[in-house]
Image (cartoon, rainbow over all chains, first blue to last red; front, side, top):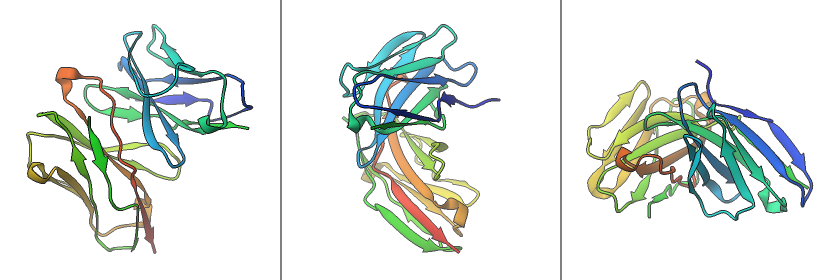
Length: 110
Length: 117
């Protein structure tokens, strides 16, 4: 069974640009979570999607947004990139109570 | 709100030593789950264990064992006869139970374990 997949592996952007990160959950999992792991800040919850709806978000500004598609894959968009957005972005899918993580997308903002 | 303290930032051991990673959590929930994840240098978080708050039986899985003490809000993780491949960052994380399913994991800062040969 394939695990959670994320693309791209690495992404380099400049300040002010927009970044789009993608995640495909494990087959049969309908919930997708996004986490940010920035240097010195640890792993922080960003967004949770379930059945196509945003269910909860962490303490992040509105320029962090996303969506979930009918096939349960998800996209994270970060607008107006700032230097401190440089981080590893991890996606997880959940069933029923465990969250299984993808390999992450490393976003570098120059 | 939930909070996790992993007081050990870094631990270095030599292969075959036993090592215990401490985790203390705070929660107002009466029932909850506790998790441990491993993050090797590749970056992917690997699920290790899930424990219900109402099940205080200790668990052993191969070289791994977990000691859950609800009275002291601790959920410690022991690796017996450590190996170089155990080198990673280990995270402890609680979350709410399935009656409010979907809440995010609250991660501690993690403990970096380095095992040398």
